[in-house]
Amino acid sequence: MSTRTHLRALLRQPGIVAAPGAYDCVSALVIAATGFPAVYMTGNGVSAAYLGAADVGLLTLTEMAGQAARIAAAVSVPVITDADTGYGNPLNVTRTVQEYERAGVAALHIEDQTFPKRCGNMEGKTVIPRPEMVQKVRAAVRARQDPDLVIIARTDARDPHGIADAIARGRAYAEAGADMVFVEGPRTREEIERVARELRGIPLVFNNSASGKVPPINVADLEALGFKLVIFPTHALYAATRAVQQFMAALRETGDPRKAPVDLVDFESFNSLIGLDRIRELEREFVTEG
Image (cartoon, rainbow, N blue to C red; front, top):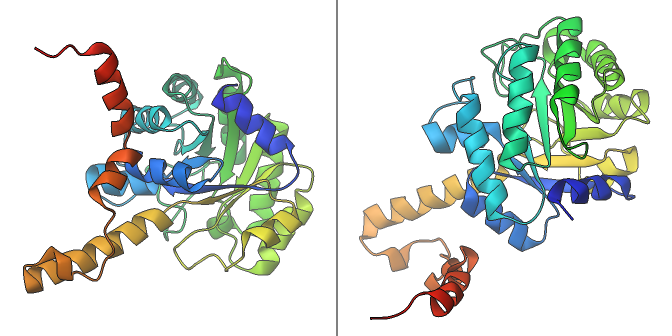
């Protein structure tokens, strides 16, 4: 079964799919090894890890598709990925879908922000007209070769236009053929419930953001409301950043890595995570000594 077929099967089952965010192959391997059924490739995290820069539309299609290909090759679970605005007009969206599909992802989302886009929880976002995004969604759906590739339409209209417009856009994008709808940035529990109620019957994505702007809500509550997919985009990146900060501060202070207040993964466990055992098997089978 392909990862796309597998994701489709997961989304048809009762319950909700939880997909923590990965920004590189190691974080994706950890997520998969922990037992999560899918990995989400975060554009915010990739921008930080790849460029050392904020998520303000600096990454290109080829950079994002390349990272998606590496992550998809590293894990056996479905990879769901951020495709920003589709990197242009409907013609660009066509190529975006083709490149991501070749990269091996199981799902991708495009958003209705103007370019240059911003991280979904940053201030100052603006969105394109609804009919323009409808055309992008139609182009994305038509561009896929594998019908199991999941096309997610995201709207960022809540901040500039209000939750009612965001919901109306979500409904229009579903009618244009999107498999799932992602209303970014509801600011209250009531808004989350309204999205679920007014878009009932449409498979919904929820962004459980680490920004602090989205009200806290657990996976069980989202499932009860009817959401089908929840992503945790930057939690792993923030956890890793804090751990590295603590380790480096202690190392600078003491000069002794053993005195750092961070529990390091051991050498053997890390090598096992990144597949050294499999490499050793291949060496024994194919590499002749001498």
